[in-house]
Every structure is written in structure tokens, then in C-alpha cells.
Amino acid sequence: MSGNIETDACDPLVRIENLRRGYVQRRPFSGSEYTIEALENATLTISRGATLALVGDSGSGKSTLARCLALLEKPSAGEIWFNGRNLLELQASELCAVRSQIQLIFQDPVSSLNPRMTAQEIVAEPLAIQKGGTRNQQRECAIDWIVRVGLPNNCIAKRPMEFSGGQRQRLAIARALVLEPKLLILDEALSNLDLANQECIVQLLADLQAERQLTYLHISHDLRLVSQIADEVAVMNEGRVIEQQPVAKLFSSPKEDYTRELLLALPSLESICIDRSA
Amino acid sequence: MEPLLEVKDLSIRYRGSDMREHRAVEGVSFEIVAGQVLGLMGESGCGKSSIALALLGLLNNEHAEVSGSVVFRGQNLLQMPDHSLEKIRGAALSMVYQDPGIALSPVMRVGAQIAEVVHAHKQWGWEKCREEAHSILARVGLEPTNRIYAAYPHQLSGGQLQRVVLAQALVCGPALVIADEPTASLDARNQAEFITMLRDLKNRSRMSLLLISHTPEIQASLASRLMVMREGRIIEQGDFDGLYAHPVDPYTRALLRRADRLDDLEAIERKSRLHQQITG
Image 1: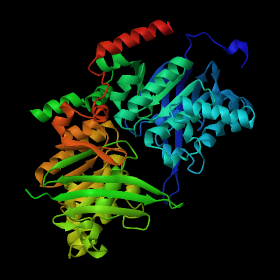
Image 2: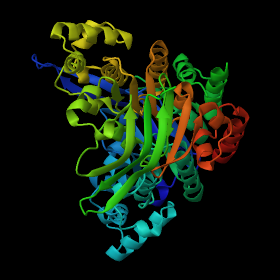
Image 3: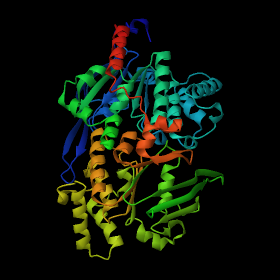
Image 4: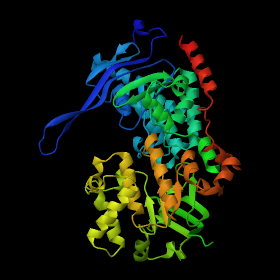
């Protein structure tokens, strides 16, 4: 990227403004069309090197927003500013480079990793697509990342089904980070894991963030997890971001009733255990 | 008291296409008495779901080798011929699956899918089976039952579908229900509602529950006993309150204790002040 685009550190890495995305549906029999608005003027910002958690009920538009940001879907209107450029105005040739800067990790590694490829092939594939280095360099880089996310280096020839749930998610992280992105979108990436594994992955993500100034957009409906990992929280409801606040402020003084309801829906483990003994 | 279900030395091995054996479960023993909720925790791939499938006799095929004994109401399910097993499965012993989107047929009305279960197990006419389906829909809180009965799965929300799957499991009045991550596909609010409903239904009958879930809050809301698995073996089992207060194994502790900072707002505030300094 050219020099003048390196903006100062105060500028947020991502600024999404009035993003809209509608899905056109057809009524059965009559055939008339109508639009479901998954995103209605969603607006949020993500600071550099920070973790923004995006929370809300299912169907509130969290994943649609993530898919638009990752350029997997085209919004109907609005602006997505990433690193000082509006992604929706870029040429197709420029988008290829931007895509490698934004990586996505999904909830279910079983269905997002190709079962017929080995761990090393899975991690090296993005490099091959972006044509980074020779075949040998790609191989070494992949192995390097597999080890760095905490997988044993004798596992490079194994296939996804031979890993446990936590290991598969580590593999997905290695694949996402091999292109050295600036932004990592985690769409419920930790919700299938038990607490012990969750804790390890949270630690790994925190270490990587400190080491490489990574920015995370973390989609989750688990508010307990969000309280541990996020710097800021954005709450979505019916296609809108209804509030965005630093994590402590959101938990102590939510502005919206909807947020308060979300927080109340989930008693802590301690309070459940006190109820048990009562 | 005679246990409702007694599992002794259960081992499960899968054979891959290359004839290599994979040991999924090894020497697992436990029992469930009537009215009890037994929680089962462990990481994905540790064998939890294999146990559930083996209890239901769904692993009787050439790819799996099941040994040990599963005694349900005095009968060993592992040695039972298929036609006798079919009488128990879905009636006295039933299962709630993790993903209702896969468990339900997309081309049948959900009410008919529930009535079908009754029809398969009882010598009743269709009219009575339909009435039974309506009454169970009301019991799991899906009202108006007429509208839900006639709906196809794609017309219902995730929370509603999970209740339909539960209704299917409960409609024949089972003695034991196996629930495999019943809330995994629900959001926080639906999760809380589903758990409360399950607890009420359980308290009103003498149904037992084998609850597979890795979320400690869900186990704490329902389970009276807890069993922790790792790599196919049970590493700890006992009374829930006892295990929660004094977990012996460090893995049990890691599964049950969250680094919960919701109550520790001061720590979060410190972090956010730090963050403001960094970002200016």
C-alpha cells in the first residue's frame, strides 16, 4: 500500500457506516418479491489492536455484518472503511490484497476445514492462492504457524478428523493468520469448546494480539466470555447496532433496555450454585 | 434402590476404512437412579456422544465394536435383538439431539413428526396420536398448538425447533432421556428459557436425565451428579456440589471454573483505562 494511506494510530482500523443488506425473497404461489432487511443502517468502529465483541440474539444480523466486512457479501448501501479506504469503492484488482488483510474463523471447524486435506495443506492453501513465495517456502511457513498455535509438529500430515475440537480450532487460527492479516473476525469461534479449551484459545489469541497488534471482531452470544476478552462491546438488535461501549461501562451501566435484558438472561455460575444450596 | 440404568465397563471402538482401530470409550461404568439428572462433561472428541449412541443401541454395525453391559430396567440393551430394542427406543428411553435442524424432517409438518412417534409405540388410532401430540406441544410451551402442529421446520425459530425435538422425546413418557448438548444451537436468552422449562418438566415427573453439556452453568442448573470424561475415560464422578466445591482433578477444575470477571468490574475498568491510554 502507498505511504499516504498509513494513517495515524488514533484512526480506527474499521469504520462501518449505515450499512444495509437486504435479502430478496419470493412469496410462494404469488411469486411476488419482498425484502428481509438483515442489516438496517448498522454503524460501528473497531480501534486498532483492540477486541470488539458483537453480541445479540440469533437473527439480529451479527453474521451478516461479519460477512459484509469480510467481503463475502455485497451490502445494498453504506460504507465500510478499512485502514483508511472505503472497501465498497475499490476495484476488483485492489480487493484481492485487502481480502488477505481480513480473515474469518467460523464456529464449526469440522465443516470449515476440508476433511481430505492434511493440516499442512490446509494452512498452506491461502499462501498458494495469494501466491506468496515458492512451494517450499509456503510449506515451511505453514509448519511454522502450526507449531506457533500450539499444535505438535508431528501432526502436519494428519487430517482434520484426527484432531480434537480445540486442536481443530487452533488449525483454523493458523490458516487465518498465515497471511498476516490486520483484522481477524471470529464468528462464534469459541462457542463449541469446553471451558478448559476456551481458556487456552483465549490465551493464544491474547498472545498473538500483543505480538502482532492484531485487531479482533469477536461475534458471540456468550456474555461471560465477552466480559473476559473484549475491550469494547457492540450490541445488535434487528439489524441495527443499538449501542457500542467499553466493556466495563456496558456491564455496569447499559444504555438500552434490550442490553439490560440480555445481561439479565444469564445468571452467573456462582448465583446458580447459591440457589442450589438454598 | 435398584438403579434405572447401570452401565458396566463400556468400551467402544471404531474401525476406520484402513482397518485401523480407534478407541473412543474405554471401561466406562456409571449408574442412574430414577428421577436423577446425571451430567456428563468433557471436551469434544472425548467420547460423550459415542456413549449416548451406544446406550440407544445405535452403534450395532460393522464399523463399531461395543463391549461391556448396559442394563436398563434389568435388561441388557447390548444383547437385545433389534425388534425388542425398537420397542424401548423412543418410548422408555429417548434422546434429544443437538441440532434440531438435522433431527427433524424438512418435508413433514412438525406435529405429524411427533404423532408418528406415538403411533410407532402405541396401538392407538391416528386421531388419538394427534391429540397426544397437541398435549405435549402445550406442555413444552409451544402455543397455540394448532399453528405449531401444522408448521414445517423452516417456519419455526431455533428455540421453537429445540422444543419440538424435546416434545418428540417426551411424548411417550420416557423413564430416561439422553440430552446431547440440547442448548448448543440456541442463543443466551433461549438457552435460559429452555433450561428452566426442562427443569420444571423434570420436577413434575420421575423422569431421569443424562445431560451431555460442556457448559458449567447448564450442568449447575440441572445436574445432581456429575461425570467428567477425558480421552474416552471417566476421570472423576460424584455429587455435583461436592465436585464443584472440591474438584480433585485439575481438568475438572478447569472445566467448572471460569475466569469470570463479570463480578470483578474493577479489573475490567482497569483494562479499559489502560486501553484508553493506548489508543489516546
